[in-house]
Image (cartoon, rainbow, N blue to C red; front, side, top):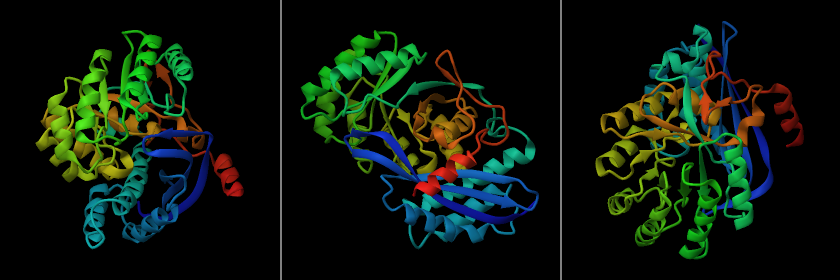
Length: 362
């Protein structure tokens, strides 16, 4: 089997309403859909995205620039592509857009691997479990009032979720504490609650707020510091009893190795887009296991469930329904867990009619 063509398709996915976090407002996403074609008719699918459709064209150009590396090659030689691409991006650097381009193609290749074997990826990658605990991350934004927070938190619990995440970043720590109190009272003591600061604090602010939050028994305090300050994050983690979760903005095993060496986080959160695709996600997951550190996922719910199902140290899937309309199939949940689909490859395929509609609107 050989790769014959790589197609990239840009689309804009609008949110039904504006949302906000400490990182700013989000109105839409610029997505680049990737189709890798083979001479046996098997097509691998994947996508990457930008917030608010900013610099989406740059992502597409990066993917298109890497595509010639796999034309005429065996798509099942995923490690060969990754190694070749890693060398190829040396001049531009091994973080940022360059790695996102690798991730986009790597994920599509792995989809081909699964489809060719007629097996779901999680089984080919190791097969640790067929259901992964999930937390609902699609709400409880800074733009919500306290009444809206309580109502939405209750809704998620009524839907069967046993864990939910809210955002921090109010004008004062006291406002953040009050918002967390409202959510905790709405869901009770037995539902896991995560709080995400979206990199909005300084080291001192994070320690002070983290200590104030400890009465609420958070499952974790997420990304209190800017992603590049892994040394400061290690000091925050050491100062607090509440576990620190971070890593969604980190790149490849080299970035995560540094986090592990410093003990910067109690939970690592590799993102399929930034980490380097399936190939590198698995390397990071196994590296974390060597340090007895658990992992969760960041976004890409439909795809992340496959890689999380393949590793024993995965503790949560982040359920974010932003991109669910792109697919023909939907995630299934049972008893607060996401079911890993037994369909081949990712187990999710792009809805061609919906994609066509998005193209016509853009």
